[in-house]
Image 1: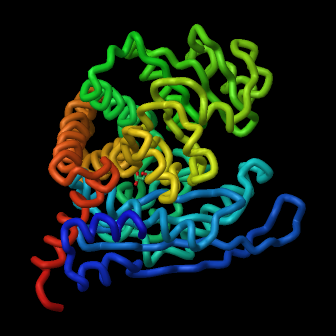
Image 2: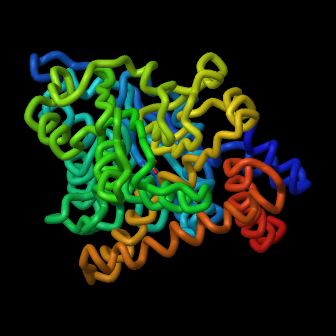
Image 3: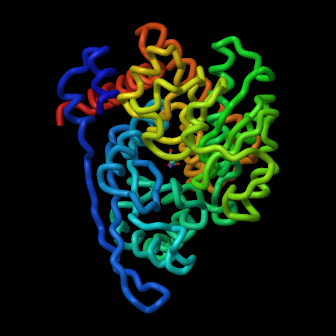
Length: 403
Ligand code: GLU
């Protein structure tokens, strides 16, 4: 909300828009009794927050993590509204979550929990009302269960959820999409800064779907990825990490722990190391007022949602760090989700090349618009992204009339 208010002040946004956009439309809290493998029953708490449906049905992922709570889901839902409005998708914003540690749950338990969550939200989800997708701790596997459980109740409805497996109506290019968008916006930023990719170094924090794909695709562009990390710590190699080799290691071992292709560092060291580009692609609030001063990268591209706290923004701005904000940098995922939904509803499927050809201009146009706004208002790229998104939302609210 700090960023929203800053952007709203710059464009003198009328109070009624601030009141409407400032709160979620709907907050749903469910408690899911699920039988565990040992025969006992445990109640899992879940959430779905519909932040806005002004621009269309609400869209946003579902997160499985032990720290998930209502405040986090509310913030993430708001970010989805701004993200979709910013890139011009016909969607509002939502987010869901279940408080659980997926690493300690068996596949069967996760399936029962996901199906229970889907049943509890059967009147909320819908291809024209609220469309979930993967987020931290979930992937195409959980989306297949949601699709199947929902379709059992209402009949075949692939458009109710995106990020599905290819076999069940998923889209080509959806898995790498978020990392791909990070790469596209990074290359645009490098071009603006006048850097040569071959002379540019990068550190990527987080090696899940977003971080590993971003690292791989940045490496393909000639950028030297000198550090990567996951929850087990950071891995550094001055001459550049062989990202494909690290991905292979991760697939085989489940984490980067013990990866021999690099030196061991901490996640904290990675965030403040001497590189040109930093891609935080893990969780919220990893760069705060406590470490922002130490950040040496001159370009930050936010693969994660909310990795830089609002209190760190001012410090980084002062240091002249260019930040490509989350709602722009990681919008490639929801953009390809949109094309998945379109394909499901038409029953006509595109090649990976067609998906790229459709998604690339959307990301590039959004980047250019944010960059122009940043110059016109003499504000950060983040505030510029909010200005652009808020203007679209406010126009939508205005056109809907006086309800
Ligand atoms: N969870 C992703 C995000 O934060 C993707 C959302 C979607 O595809 O709907 O953008």
